Amino acid sequence: MHQVQLELTDQLYDQAKRRAVEAGFKTVGEYLADVVSHDLAQDTENLDHLFTPGRIAHIDSVIAKVKAGGKTHTAAEVREHFRKRFEG
Image 1 (tube, rainbow, N blue to C red):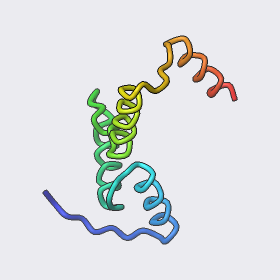
Image 2 (cartoon, rainbow, N blue to C red):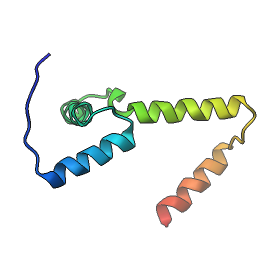
Image 3 (tube, rainbow, N blue to C red):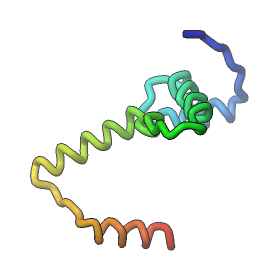
């Protein structure tokens, strides 16, 4: 493992920090390492980079709600939701 030091403008750092928080990363460094990994992995079919800590937490939350009897959706409902979302 190698450690790299970067210099970012205040604006870039603030954007990276915001995105790191939104994606559930503990640090900006973890987020940036994921971004670089994603960029380098684009030539492969490995989609592991999409499963950020924030997304995994969201998936776990949804699973818990379904197990507790929460609303589920049919495939048709999901298609309609995304059709409206992409049109809008």
